[in-house]
Amino acid sequence: MGSIFNTLSIGYSGLSAAQVAIDTTGHNISNAEADGYTRQRVVTEAAPPISNVTPGAVGNGTQVQQIARIFDQFVFTNFSNASADKESSDFTKSTLQQLSTYFPEIDNVGIKSDLHEYYNLWQSLSDNPDNNAVKVALAQQTQTLTQHLQSTKAQVVDLQNQMNDKLKVNIDEVNKIAKEIASINIAISNTEAGGINNANDLRDKRNLLEISLSKLVGAKVTTGKIESNTAIDSNVAIKSGSYNISIAGFNIVDGASYHPIGIDNTDNASGMYDLYYERQDGVRIPFAHEITGGKVGAILDLRGSTLNGTDGVPTNGVLQNVRDQLDMLATGLIENTNNIYAKSSDTLMQSNQVFVNPASAVVSSGLNIKKGSFDIVLYDINGQVAAKRTINIDDLTTFTNGTNSIKSQIEANQDDNADNNGNNDIDDFIAVNYDTYPPGGALSFSLKNSGLEAQGYTFAIEDNLDSNNSFGSGTNFAGGLGMHRFFEGTNASDINLAYDLRTDPTQISAHAAPISGNNQVSLDMVQSQFEKIDFTHENSNSTFHDTVYGMFDTIATGVGTKTNAAILSSDTITARYNAVQQEYNSVSQVNIDEEMSNLIRYQTSYGAAAKVITTVDQMMNTLLGIKQ
Image (cartoon, rainbow, N blue to C red; front, side):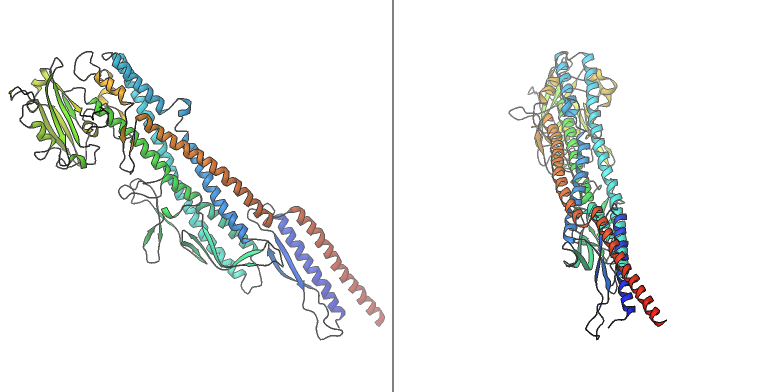
């Protein structure tokens, strides 16, 4: 049978177990507000009994089996996924709400309002084609419109650049967290070696980092197995064995090692960062398009995940699409307006600097010029048509080289007036030249000599439209090249009123034929706002065929629709997140009331164990008294 000293040991074991339980309860209470902390419970069991004694195995007190975390991996995984979705939706919503403020059309201010006033002033000019005050007002409104287009695109570009900077910051954070998790894995392995201790606080720290990583990139954690222990608590399901974290199948943490996500922008003229995963053999695998979850996924969806190979500009992404569509709007407005404005006669028409080979086909030059024909119209000093020639553009037409070039067609010796006079045709008045300015050049039409200008001759370019006389149905030769510019620039970044018209707005022409009272150009400008034209962009595979207003409505409505969708999606995801978080907290979060109840229970247990020891002490004193 057991000795009195064994009884003392039994009391001490109860005292020690109660002390550990009180310590653990205190640990729970002190960390009740700590992020990521999981409540812990002391698990005790009967110590091995004393055997080979009479009357049999005698109890030998208690022992602490383990200090367990009340943690459910399945609930945690749901919470981690919900956290990633919420982080992504919240970031998308806030960014799109900021983007939508750049299009305040609901308050009758903004680009669309500027367009209305711009065309209203063209209408006023058509009513008073020689009124300089109207021309000044038109010039001022034109600059208001162009400045608004420029500032709106600049805001979108700035927001996109912010996304790019945030991408770098967040990827650096991902790599930092991955490295820290790998080091924690080493510490957990060392602590739990031998299967005696549980690295509870280290696992809590790792779980907190997993949540952070999930919020950033929607990372997936996989382990060798998940073990349940319903004897401790029905909510216990803890992962054990091998451990790795992956993104779209690429491991960034593998046990004690980590593999950083590469990020670089040194080869991109635009400064946009590209992501890559570097294999052990040094091969870099493009990685940006693989990340779809978390904040980084939202950033890439907004900024664009795929970069083109020329200047590193994104080819997709919400902000890039808005940026491209603003360029489509501005380019369409520039080209269509300039194509119409080329009807106003002048003595010199020179294109923008173009980066094309003068011997290349016009329609495949990269400029928005289509097959068809346009007319060169020569006016005399009285505004009468002195000569007219149709210039055809087909698949083989070049700018200046060959018999089918623009130059050769204008300079061909032919009778434009059917009067058998070889000295009063277009080729006798108009010279064509292509001035090379490496790496580009400029095509120009001009009167052959200053004497013709002194005699009052001028010329114009008139596009031949379809049977419905629809603007945008012709070649767009003058508009694509910018031969006679009302607008200068090529997109929303640099659109502006032509320099000479900014300097002297009274030079704005309302006329086609150079005579007082002619308002053909201004009437065409007014009509053009209701005509559908093609809006294209080299970075987009889509072409919009719409009016200027319709194109802008497409942009603004797209932004508004995406913003509303993001708000609704965020509300739905937030509701799901709150439900999952509540479930997770019910399993793992510290309940102060429960812990206080446990503290009273363990305090009572401690006192009872102490009573055993004092009883043994009295027994020993009695024994010693008998001896005396």
